Each structure stands twice: as C-alpha cells, then as structure tokens.
Amino acid sequence: MPNTLEAVLIRALEAAITGDHTIIEEVFTEDVVAWSPNLSATNRAELEAEFAENDEALSGVVFSVDSLDVIGAKAIAEWRASAEHTGPLIIGDDLLIEPTGRRIVLAGASFAEFRGDKISALRTYFDDAALIEQLLMDV
Image 1 (cartoon, helix red, strand yellow):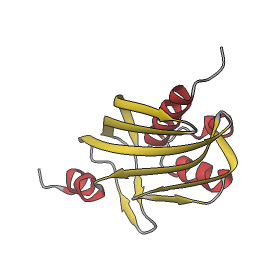
Image 2 (cartoon, helix red, strand yellow):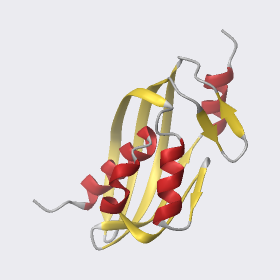
Image 3 (cartoon, helix red, strand yellow):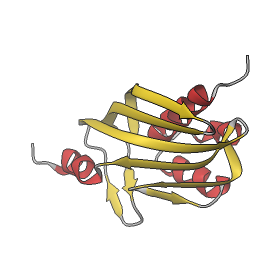
Image 4 (cartoon, one colour):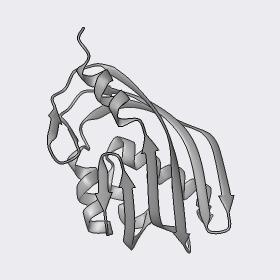
C-alpha cells in the first residue's frame, strides 16, 4: 500500500518528537528544508543530525493528531504530544536540559510541502517557552 501524504506527515512528526532519525530517508527529500522553534535544517543530513541529537531525551511518548488537511501537495496538521523527560535535551544551540523525569505536554501545528510522496519542506510551530517552563519549573 503506498504511503498517503497524511501518513507520511504523521510518521515525520512522530519521528521529530521521539528523535527517531532512522526514517529520515524514507519520508524527507534530500534537499528538505525544516524549521521549528528549536530546529533548523537545510537538507536531510542536517535534519538527521538534529533528530539524533535528542533521540534519547523523551520516553513514553503519546502523540495524537487533532486535525490534518491535505490541499494539493501541502498538508497541515494540528497535534498534541506528551512524554517523560528521561534524557538530556538540547534546545536551540546553547541550552542543555538534563533529565528531569517530568511529564511534559506540548501542542503545535505543522505545515508540510511534498514532492511526490516525500516532504520537501516542514515548518512546525509550538510554544517553546512553555516547553522550557515545564522542564525548568521548581518542584
């Protein structure tokens, strides 16, 4: 069964949240451009390195898509995720947050452009300040 654009985007988003860099080649074009508040990549190799950097940061990930629309070769998804912070997490280029064991919750929206059945551009928006606050708040 061929991948639908919806299924490809969901796999890509799950991989981004879990840090699963093993599916990068399968869902992204070689010249993919990706951006989020804590990630910037101008090709698949950079994106793979970004995903691998945090591949052990979260565990027990629960990911759900609230809505997903495909319009031509573009897809838009609103999503929610929660996870345990069980490994070092690098945010941006200069903030390392050691494991807190806290359960974090994040909601966002992602916009993907496709070339064929692979993502050639991905922009993801979420409140990175809320994420940092959850990780650094006093107990």
